[in-house]
Image (cartoon, rainbow, N blue to C red):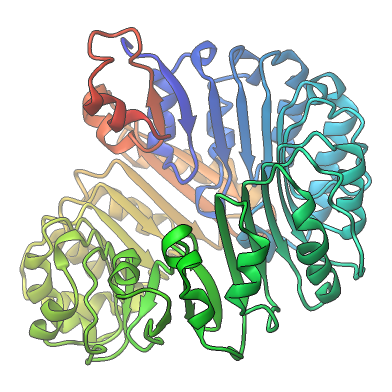
Length: 549
């Protein structure tokens, strides 16, 4: 390939795209790599490492592993000492992963032990590290560490960080667990950025002491962020103004059941003119915006009446996902940037136009039988719409309302619990949505239904199915049967959940050659191309287009 790819982010990336990217990257050119085995992208690491060995990424500076399976982590860890340029390492387990895997702590401990025992040389070179916790982990190897993020941290561990890593420039910790009234963080005198998320119920006194007694001693601190689920005594803008005068940015989010004071103390010249820090009280949260501005909203929700803004327009502009639960919207509400629209009821089109700009909607979610009646009216006025999500039980209702109309604009179709008693329903669904490229079915009956979808959708490039019936011992047999039945242009992968013994994912993707430019339009959020050696490198258009992972 002519253009060197330097950064690859495979988080939320489809198997089809992973396969394509693996065919078009050179491992010795990659500077940053993100791999993820999220529940809906399970098997990504297996596919990726069928192409490469981690030691081939000789220029790698940054590596992020999200919900990675233990067996692949062991393979990676055994070779981390060979990645001599690696300076940033992140081992991440998401909250959703915690909720479905009861053994995630044991799995993380095993990973952490592997890391500590096998990678002393690698750890000593790190300048940036993200881990779930550092419990029982020595900090001695981290002499060069300047940026640390810990997802779950006790006060004891935070005290250890303060005393053993005083040269940290940035610290991001979620403080929970044991209760303690005093903790000296002033030892971190080199900090310029601090983010604290604190369990206020267990650490109420500590929370007060940290802010009042030690924040003023962090003389180099310029950026501070604080989250807590209990802070009824700190809805006082005057007090915060006295504590944060030297800061460049200050963001907070506090769970406050009852706002004891109005927001007049946040309407002073310090907040509105000097700092231009804006706050809102919404759904029990007192928070700064735009940092914590809500991006999701439902039409039954609280209005944005309590803020220090002169107008709530900026709050409405931040909403990108809207759930319509009522036929009537709040007066003076207009949402111009909605990208995901979830319809739980039927609404007159005139009311929709008065409350929502439909021009930016890319994803429509139909959640009730009453919302089906709007389909033929709403689709033509959504020019960017290309994704549809619907519960499997509502598919027959949708087919009835489509009245033999062919919907060609939908490219991604998501079906939840797709148990169709009649094969004809699947065929009709494929007939009414003939241009589907990406298909996701959370739960399906059998491999016969999978084969039917593939045969009926001629433009399909990637499909993922959840199944309860595929036992591990039958993996090879089922995979072989699928490969023999479906067109040879498709690849097939069956992945078994490590925490749900009877649940499996079936991934099928197109492996025919596709032009790089055609596929890159779908991949621009996953890969970064280095244009520095090309004639167009000075073009702002190209730099802006490819500057993000």
